Image (cartoon, rainbow over all chains, first blue to last red; front, side, top):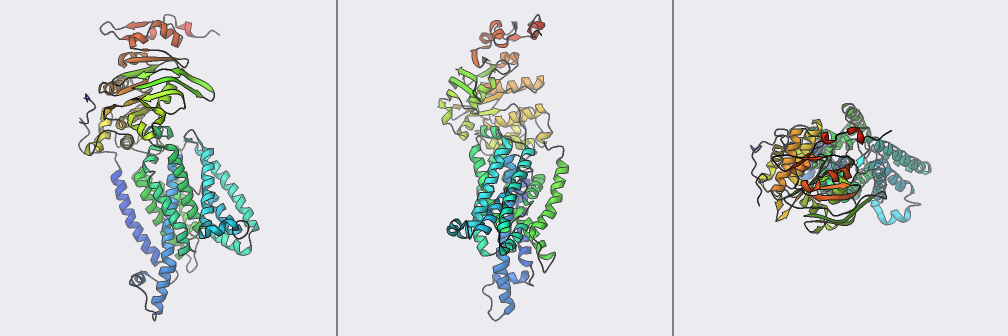
Length: 367
Length: 271
């Protein structure tokens, strides 16, 4: 090759200094957040209404309890049947919501996109409420064969429908108008809310009770059945998003440019929308309306490690999981022995945070 | 070689370009010039694959329709007119995006230093840690050039020449950087790659291009060396403006001075 000027013999900038490369920050953040998650897991396992504390965990890990020892038996049941599934569910829901927010923000090329804010959670909620209210009557032919997955699948379909409509409405030739996106989200959320209202109207008293608690958002009902129903869906969706990391980075430059860079843009968008709907749907199905995780977590991380999705994706999953476990620990202790729905805790943290983002970015957001 | 046959593009039922037989050889810089709205950018975008088209486009003999996004990204890179970034990447991170796309043709250790080399090449040494969104328009344009250079850093890879497609690459640059960007494109062509640039500046086109294609009214008016393409008659036909082509005494490069228009009131439509 006759290349002279373009030979990879670099004249300058080769001193090993790569100023402006923040990937080391990303790697460090992932490691630190992994440690934080371990701590949050321990906090989650040792917090609760019963006196079971961390020392009980080691006894439980030691094997089957002595049937004569009442405390050991109680600890074993509390750990294995209440706290462990609750912890796993909390981690999955937190990671699912945070990553859903991140992927939506990447897809819409906008830091304000969030499944809760733009109506995706409402759509998923409509699907879930439909199954709760009509599952034994009108939808019985569907919920019968789907078994424990019917709630998750209905929530997924609700989330998928809203995400797709939102994307179609708010995005023109690769550009998303923020105002259109947020307003369309409000409209879609209101529509889903109206339909949910009709279902609530026809619900029986016992269904109403279920709905109210579900709607506030809580991990209180966590059990192994719920872990088995939602866990694999969220885990699969999280795994799928890892394949989007380079594509989402390229998409930052716009859809046309991403395509020029070799990204199969249409496929990327399809996978992203399905993953967001699946993760949000499965999370909403088991935990109800837990808001703001998807906007607080990615935004905070972007401030620290920059917008590179190769690190944002794992970091968001880890921080989302930790955030939800800690919020859940707060919800379990703040009004003990009663329990505050976790959605109230995340909203109390996330609401002011969201306002702070708006104030900081007021000039940067193009309306 | 990039070659089109009978290339036509219709957008919303309106024919933008029709029956264009364009070609760009490796080792050459091919400029596309023409008046506003003549279809220059549409031609470039059809070659890139942004528009559906009738006719045929071949890249190194391969049908452009059969190339997947990844294969195409290994053969050609595209500098867009303007790039708005959704998130606050640093300059270094933007350029590094180019190394994960396409095939830079550089492996191992050197690949990690490629963004620095590309930044140095576009005269932005030391800009790595700056926030892209804080730069001026001209600086952003050069950062994007560094990014697209990374995508096909080695102009000929596995005996396949690769192509830089530039859409008005100098539109927001000062004179020094206009010349510099054109010189970078020229060097890419001299190293065996191909360059296609949509240009407004006829003098830059004459100075740096091997061949000039003039597009007017959606058709290819002419295609040839600067001397062949830039003639008084053709410029008047294309731009509707009776310009006179001059020539530098020492080098036989034609130039066009706006001053050659003796009576500029003649091109303002009468009320």
